[in-house]
Image (cartoon, rainbow, N blue to C red; front, side):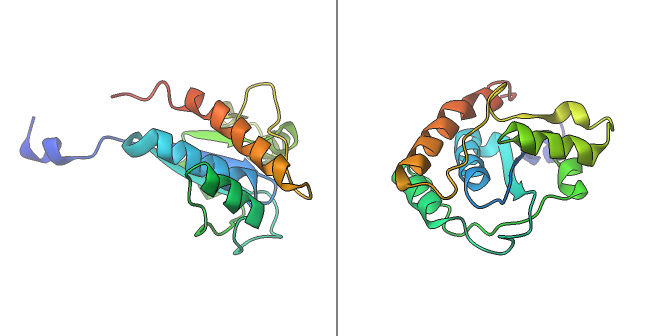
Length: 155
């Protein structure tokens, strides 16, 4: 091993989490995955719609994340694009409808196999326009589903 090799950072697993607006679920999921993945993962989030682009996460999402130990106050919503999809090793959709739109964006390209649901076979319920307890439940669901995406990372 050369001197340069001993200082080179190992490749991080790149995860992109996508929901509808990048306003509730995906910012929370990105924070959870980044925390659990540590130095082994690089995590980003995005949404399918432009409505919240540039804006923060919903105040209830910020509160639920904060109570669970995750700080998403600096989050700013972005719209998913092809460059983001190309960047990611795994693209995790928060529900079946989001997954279908992502699959349409890839149009059957070789990237399609890296697309999947955050929780296989299930939707992470969107707490949008619900009371705070829905955000807490969303937070719990996201935390429970996170570890499976990071189990196979190399040491």
